[in-house]
Length: 242
Image (cartoon, rainbow, N blue to C red):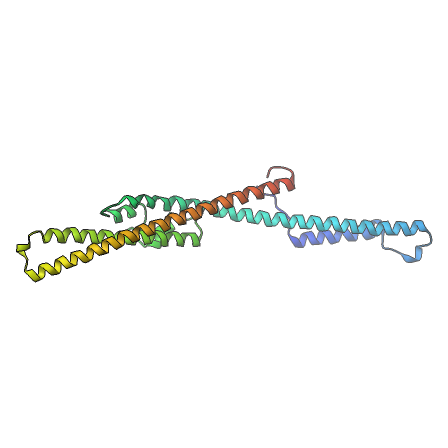
């Protein structure tokens, strides 16, 4: 457990108490009417010097206590952040495996099996359920990145299904009226263009998701290094493991 340190008002009050005690209780205030000899003057000067030295020490101690309090609060914040950042990396990294889809058949189901885009839920709820310890800003960023991948994957899958179904329908041209046949084939071509666009955008979205993951990992490394630095400084201050 971390040591409970007094707050700034308490330390200030203690410092003032020490100064007054030293001034009045030990040496007493400087009485110029009693200065008749060099010894008395010297003693008074030493008394003043003692009070000043005591005040300097007290101020230094207060500054140290303030520093320790700040470091302890920073360490607490880092310890609260790290678990959520790690779970965000673990959750988001799974979706990078879906780059392997070529025809995109089954990609929506794959995302849903990993806890995103679940039927009857919302994307926000899915991410919140998966990342209960993650801070709001990181959670929203992950949601947006994964949703972009999911959305372009869904568009590509739908386009691929239409292309496959309508291509099969128009396999026998003699069964179609010429105008209807040409219209359907034109629709197939438009869906091929849409599929190609969605496939490219899906790759871009995956790259952005990977960059987001790398950014979170870098933040984790930074926080872990800072936490170790804080712990070393606190251990040095207290002279023992805490």
